Length: 141
Image 1 (cartoon, rainbow, N blue to C red):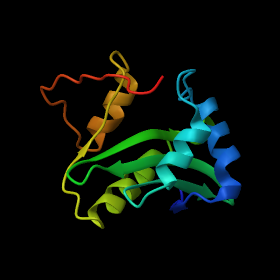
Image 2: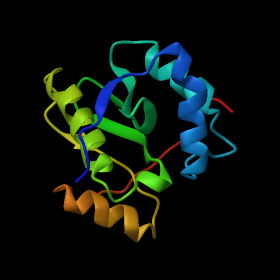
Image 3: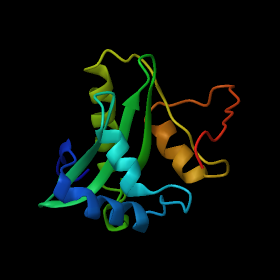
Image 4: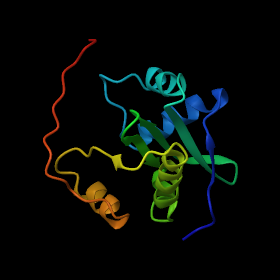
């Protein structure tokens, strides 16, 4: 494992760098505006975006939040040239700690079906597949 990440909440000056990180990691989708997603996460105390810095550069991030009962993460990212160094584990641990500080006792996460590499990563952190069916409905186009 490499040196520890310095993890902190995203600042205004970090937004463009975080969006670039998400783009290079293949996390941005045409139907989700990442700038709006970041602003939405920062708007209330139930969510935030955490960034992990190494040598003054943002190399990892996670959007974390809760609904008052369960936590969830989105946009978990590590710069491609920094993957395999333990930064993913560190940024996830930071998200878990963020939730623990708010007395959230369980975290859920969503993985696109067929993404075995990401599933294996989360399993290495102790996450398990639960027999659930995820349903969704768009409320705003």
